[in-house]
Length: 212
Image (cartoon, rainbow, N blue to C red):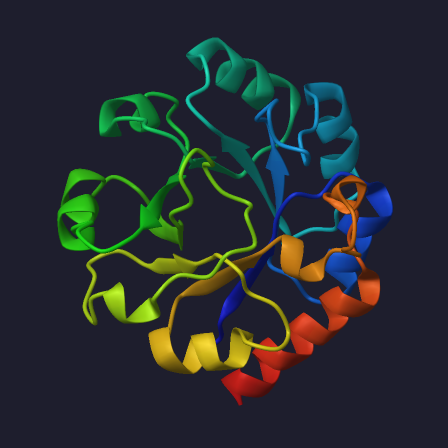
């Protein structure tokens, strides 16, 4: 089975195009103001419009006012919503748009119950639990905490890069993988949101190699 790939935290046109050129299935745009990868609605619209056909645009929100989500949907051609906070199933479903629910995984989190609660979701995005941060931390979690049979597609996130994504795919067999910091230039806080085209290409090569 082909493992899909989402490159998240895109903030620049050249990075959106690099993701598409390397074969990514989706790019993520972060509408969470406290994130260093945050984009405004006008900026997001400019990024989305440069993407070629069949590359999905995912809008990421964290405990957002419903009015912000609706404004983003009105002005940006989002294909999928991703909710990374404490949103309820009813909140997530109210927009009439396919959505993913992110779950921060740690011991004691019942992922089977999460899948039941959010059965209207298109999938569960499983990320590391870092206290006080909803995501984008570059931290991996214990993949053995994921049940072998979840009734929703799994999008694996958290600390992935070209060095470990093959092992992650072999261990978890997710529907898709999601990467952000693992394909960034790195080194300083200001580099968050600045992608490295060579790192994106290497990440995609590792995913494709594992799928063979």
